[in-house]
Length: 282
Ligand SMILES: CC(C)(COP(=O)(O)OP(=O)(O)OC[C@H]1O[C@@H](n2cnc3c(N)ncnc32)[C@H](O)[C@@H]1OP(=O)(O)O)[C@@H](O)C(=O)NCCC(=O)NCCS
Image (cartoon, rainbow, N blue to C red):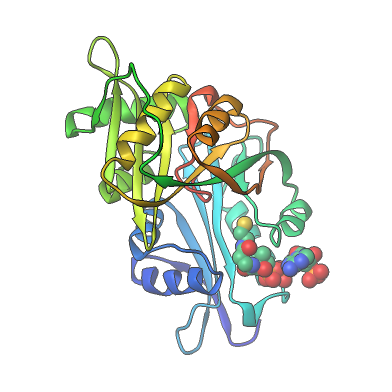
């Protein structure tokens, strides 16, 4: 592509990447982008004046699975092959052809990903609600996450996701506005949840929990004291959890496809996976 160079991106590009997300009308803050940059391999096309025309990232979770996200081509540069070049670049960075690469696609992105061998294996439900959440989940002991919980939280995440996303998770914990754990009988965490704040909304996720009641108790804890819109992205397979949060005032806002390449299913104990860490991060 004349005037554009495909480059690896890093911390210095966080403002440029955040600006690109605005052009795509996504609501990421610089803190959201920084958390992703700390755990992903980012690429993009840079113009001669330094402006970023595109971005995409691979998030390798050990060698068990990876996700692709932050695929954005600035509107002025769309339909000239940049999205394809970037997605292929991310896939070339993943050497394990037989291990899954997952992504959550937009409507615009789906034809491109299908061409590159991704298949729809499910959907993600973007649910929007309001805090305070009506109703109270009882019978669960949820408390704020402490540094002493981090090891158990990382172990829970590995079990649920079937892969090691400790870099991204550590960055998200650091960024979180609130972080909580469900306490098991012996005091060790059996579930955890985080939330971050974006302009005009609180975004809850990830939530890893032993069951629906624990998951909803985490949502309550994470929203306590906050008044305003709340977003949670949940796997469509969590039917009971969806019903429970719909009863508590959440409504479906979007239902993007979850696409996979290199396998038919994501690894891990996905019954424990109640909310995504973000559409880019799974
Ligand atoms: C999706 C997106 C990244 C595609 O980037 P792009 O550089 O325009 O895509 P490419 O030019 O590489 O297109 C490759 C192929 O994908 C398909 N495609 C791309 N954009 C499409 C669109 N808007 N509608 C239908 N098909 C499309 C076409 O088959 C295209 O090939 P063709 O132009 O030869 O027909 C870009 O539209 C974008 O940034 N959209 C906003 C953010 C977004 O939705 N990102 C995806 C996140 S999962």
